[in-house]
Image 1: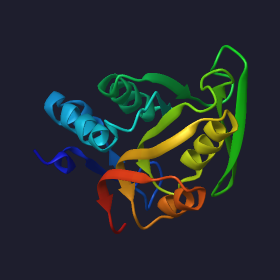
Image 2: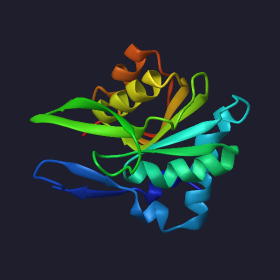
Image 3: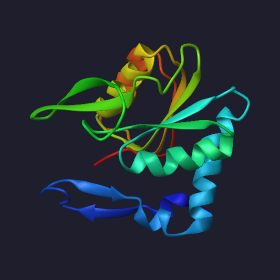
Image 4: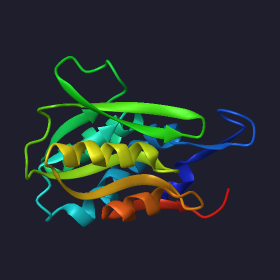
Length: 175
C-alpha cells in the first residue's frame, strides 16, 4: 500500500497560492493509518524511546498512536493556555509575527528518550520550538518524525542545526 495515495492536495487553502497536504483521507483508511504508524515507528523500535510528544493538533493523532506502537508514554505540546498544570513555553517566528507553544513542566524527566512527532514539516518553526521545550526539560531527543515533509522549505535544516535526526514518510520535492 502506498500511503502517499491517501494524502489529498487542497489548492488555495488556507490562502491563495498554498497547496495544503490533507491527511484526513489517510486517517479515514484504517489500513493506511496503521501502515503509516508502523513505518514511522520501525526505525525507532530498539532506540529506547520512553515518551513521544505530539504537536497540536494533528501531531496528537500520530503521536498517541506511535506512543502505543512503541510502548511509550505520550506528552502533548499545545497552544498557550490549553494545558491545566504548570507549563513552560517557547515562542517562534511566523511569516508575519510570532506564535507560542507549551508543554507541562513535568511532562519529561531529565534523560528521558523522546521521539518528536507531527503530521507535516514545512518551515520547521513549530517543531524547532517543540524540540527546544523538550531540551529545556532535559529530554534526550531521539528523532523527529513526520508523515509529510515539504522538502522545498527549510524545516529539515532547522532540525539539522539542532542536531535532531529527521525521518519522514513522504517527501514533497516542489510546490
